[in-house]
Length: 522
Picture (cartoon, rainbow, N blue to C red):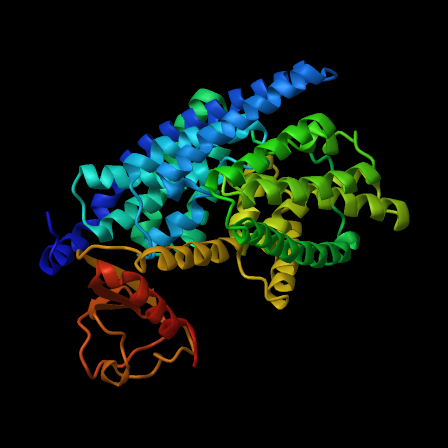
C-alpha cells in the first residue's frame, strides 16, 4: 500500500500514542531474538574454550581444528554473499537505513546475521555481540513495521526502538540502549521518540534479565572512590585514550582497505584469512580469542603484570583488525572496551610504578579507560558513561567518567579522527555507488525533524530567504511546544523544530542538506 502525503501527515498527529504500543511490541520481539542470540554466543564461547583445551599439545588435533575453521569460513562466506548487509558490525547499516541512504531486507538479514555471528564467535574471531544485536533488533523492528504495513516515517521510529532494545538485551543496559539509539543511530531527539525507545529498551531488558539474571556484564568491584588529588591523571589518561582511539579508527579502516586492495581476495577468502589467524591465536595466545571478556577478569583480579598487559593489548589490537577488516559478521563494541580496559590497566600500573599511585585504584582506571576509549572511537560520550555505569553496577565514578570522556573526546576531535561508525557507513555507501549507483529505492513519503541550532544559517532568516534543497516540503514548525504553519514570511529562530516531507528516494540527500543548514553557520 502506497503512503501518500495526506496519509503520512494524518498518521504523524497520532504517532506519539501509536509508538508507545509499537515500542512495547518491538521491545518484546527484539529482546527475545537478541536474548536467543546472546545465549547462542555463550555456548559458542564455551565450546571454543573446550576445543582450545582439547587441541592443546597435539599437532594432529590442531590440524583438525584448522580444517574445521576453514569450513566455518566457507559457511560464513556463503552467508555474506547471500546477504552482504550482514558484513561487519551492522550499526552503520542501521544508521544508513534510518538516514534513508540504505535499504535492508529483514527476512534475509535476521537469519544470516544470527548464524554468521555465531560461526565467527565459535571460530574465535575477535568480534563482539553488540553491533549484531543492534542490527538484529532494528531488523526485528523493520519486520514488525512491514507486517503491520507501516509507512517509512513510522518504520524509522520502530527500527530505532528495535536498535535500542537490541543493545539493552545484549548488555543488560536499558539506559545505554536508549541513549545510543538517540545519540548514534537516530541522531536526533524528540519526546515522542524518547518515550517509545525507552519503552522498547526497558521491555527488552526485562525479558533478558528475567531469564539470564540481573548481574552486570563486568563483575568486578571498585572498593574505593578515586581521590580528587589524582584527578589530573584523568586528564592525562583521556589524552592517551584519545590518541589510541584515533589510532584504532585508522587501524580498522586500514585493515578493510588492505583486504580490498587485493582484488583476488573475495568475501570468502578474506574470511579464510581471519579464521586461520584465529587458529594461530588458539595455539599461541588463546586469551585474545573471541570478544575477550576473560581478560577483564584476569586484569581486575591482579593476575596480569605490566609487560603482559602491553603484549596482550598489541596482539588483541592486531587480531581485532584482522578479524573485523575481513568483513566477518561481528561487532567492534565489546573488543574495543576490552582494549580500553587494557590501556587503563597499563596506564595505572605505570602510575603505580613511577608516580606513587595506590594499587587499590587500578580497577578504577580500568573502568574509566573503557568509557574514555569508547568515547574517542565512537564519539558518543553520554552513551559511554551510562554504558559503563550500567555494565559495572558502579555509580560512584560519574565525575571521573565525565572527565576522562571529555578529555578523550577533545583529543580525538583535535586529531581529526572521524567517528568510526560514520567512517564505516561512508565506506558502505561508496561501495554501493560503485556497484549500482543507487542506495535506497522507493517513493513513499517520509517525514524528518530538524532542530535549528543557535548561530546556524537559518536563525533569524525568513522561510522565503532560505535556499531549500530540492524535492522537499517544509510542512510544520514547532516553537515553544506549539505547532505553527510555516509561511514565506515566517522568521526562523534557534530552537525551532522543523518537520520536512520528502520522497523516500531523496531522504538521504535532503537529510544531509537540512542538517548542514540547521547546524552550521556557513
